[in-house]
Amino acid sequence: MRWTNERKRYKKKVEGKQTVSARARIVDPGAGLLNEERRRAILEILNRESRVLVLDLARRFETSQVTIRKDLETLHAHGLIHRTHGGALPAHERALEDPTLREKEKLHRQEKMRIAEAAAGRVQEGQVVILDSGTTTTEIARALRNFRNLTIVTNAVNIAAELSGTALEVILTGGTLRKNSFSLVGPIAEETLHRLHADLLFLGVDGFDVQYGLSTPNLLEAKVNRVMVEIAKRKVAVCDSSKFGRKSLSLIAPPSALDEVITDHGIPKADARALKKTGIEVTLV
Image 1 (cartoon, one colour):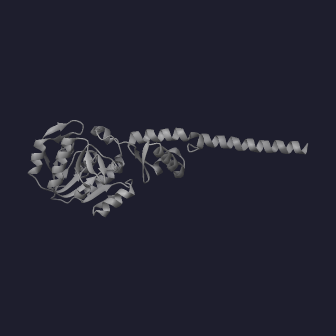
Image 2 (cartoon, rainbow, N blue to C red):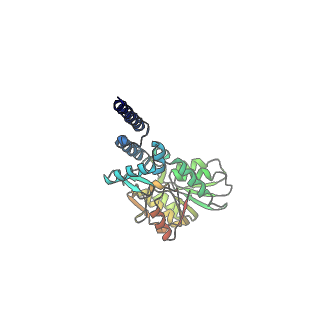
Image 3 (cartoon, helix red, strand yellow):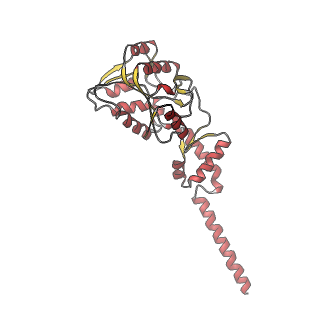
């Protein structure tokens, strides 16, 4: 009788542990039975946001960073993602991809606002500043609205509109309108820029590979950007860290053409080291 009672107590104890374990698997998204579901969700987030960070994913899925790192390593091993320090990027960036300005505005908004604030801190009254087209440079334009004595040169129709009604002098290059980016390109834009000189250029990019250089999907846009680089005394690339490790169709300039890069802390450490090694100032926000 005593042996029977002990067996019953032991069975109850084991069943209790199994019940707790089962509940843990349901509650904890990081548990083993949900690995594939979580990894599919990570891919969906990556496709939607163009970059993922280990810390952010651990918070979203309420699991450990170790678990997320294992997930990313598994996805990387299957060729589904490109593993970077602290996170991951899409495995195969599309060189011809040319999303609209409105599509890009939805991505990495907080990072772009911090970058814009840091960029505005580089500007002094009385300067001539070039703003390339793009969502990050649009945020910079907004950050410059309270200046009193600046000349802004831009090929972006939306940036000119952002600065209308301010005390700033705005020079719009003219040219052929690209509806995707609200930018003006072509010979007219290039000729206008060739007649000017600027103290400072803030250049947004679609791709930033530390070996290949800065790039954009559109050939005409790249030509205009190259002229901007030529006529500016100080050249500053402004881009969130999702742009690193990416190559677009048309090269704008090598990294050596830059004086500074302003980006967020998600930049791969190897890329930051490579840029600093060539004498480029790297500012993380």
